[in-house]
Amino acid sequence: MALLGLTAFALSIALLYRLILHPLYLNPLAKIPAVHPFAKISSLYMLWIRYWDRENATVFAAHEKYGAIVRLGPNELSVNCIDDGVRTVYGKGFDRHEFYRVYEDCGRQNLSSSLDAISHSIRKKRITHVYSKSYLQSSPAVVALIDRLVRHRFLALVSARARDQKPFDTMTMLSALALDLVLGYTFGVRNATDFLNNSSEHSKCIERIHTGRPYSTMFWLHEFPSTVDFLERVGVLSKERYESLEALHVFCLDMCHRAEAALEDAQHDSGPEDFPTVYQQFRRSLDKEGVSIVPSLQASSRLSEHGTISCSPQQLEIAAEVGDQIHASDETLSITLTYAIWELSRNKDMQQKLRLECQALGQEVHINSTTALPTANEIDQLPLLHAVMMETMRVHPIVAGGQARVTPYGKLTKLGEYENIPGGCRVQSYARFLHHNADVFPNPLAWFPERWLEAVEPGVADPKMRWFWAFSSGGRMCLGSHFAQLVMKYVLVLIYANFETYIVDDTGIEHMEGYVGGPKSGKLMVSVRAVTWNTE
Image (spheres, rainbow, N blue to C red):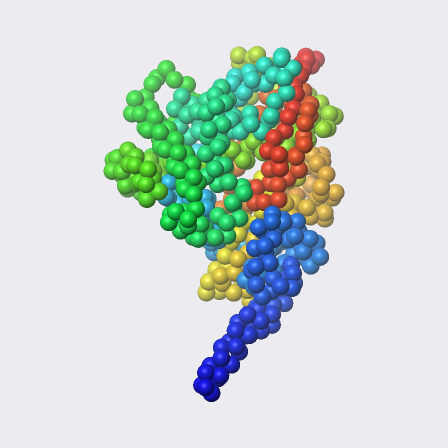
């Protein structure tokens, strides 16, 4: 009896130490102010906040109250500073948190789901060349792609809406355009999609995306990926999510087959936009790595549950990356452009100034022009256009939630004023918070493109660029950032050189509070009117 009592006493002391004394007083994070007192001893507080989609507002309020470093849990921090903060966490040595496992496709890791630096670096190296700024600005395929899809397909639809005086949802149309552009660049236009002119197929694709990773269950997929995966596999949860992802993966593999056939049977009468630029780059890189192109059907367990799929290991790797790109482009391009159109439609003076800058490029950007589009470098040289894009991405960052990393094991880390932070600690920064630094961006909630036109003292780094974080930073920053910015600039030039936009219904335009910061309603209804060119 005495031994049993002694055992119970020892167990109580151990639990008291582990659950109370260590996290409150002995943990190296103990001196860091916490988002809530309970957060010091349990992760349940932040799990509850995340479940109810209150993370962004809650963490931002804590930073406003306590400063740059805030403790979110016994072993979790939020970082809202650049030096000894973002530069450290998103530099070398910090792997991604398990949070990103949800973005796996085809049973394979991809750029978004690879957690360690080595596997991410291998995947990034495969295609970084064709997404570099220098390549994009000199590529005939890119300008031809934009000319065909934006000037001819997209503007034709916008022109029809103007002629019929019929409002339309920018989110839907821009989502179709974004997917056509990304898949057209990857596989070649003739081997990819025409969602702009096939709304039913576009709707089907979007349904697969949102059913595969529904916003309503992202909390569980981010925070408990292994549990969700197990429950789905044993049948406790519906396999609808798997089946939607499976359909999307088959869709990607089908485009791989078409692109492969196009490479084997080069058609000399096709334009540069029909060439599978990114697919070929993937193939070359995977050939060097020794990944087989022979259809050996070594499919993942997820795919094989629905029957075998004729593909090579190479194509499965490519399809995994393309599935990731489909999810990213549907959100990134369409959301950013929607908010740009919303802001410009509310600011008529700014819209007119941008129009004059765009029309100054000449007849090359006229809707009925048969001449070549301005070069990418010419588009990049438009100062007001650049300012509009930067300010839109600052005020309306796509990834609004924390981008989780893990402090490296085997060493201690300094964040802000706090030293000796051990390995294995979850840390994250939020673009929205960094962009709200009033010392760098006065009146930070206001959309004010002119702030990007202000002169900076020669030889002095622009603090706005140090704090701008729309594409993250470091080795894991968005690989397609240059492609996205270039495409979005062309879209805005071609829209506002030829049309004026008006808001019809912006109900629900405010940001969602989750990881992705798109409109709560998922739409923006606008009307357009063709404008007269200033020929002076």
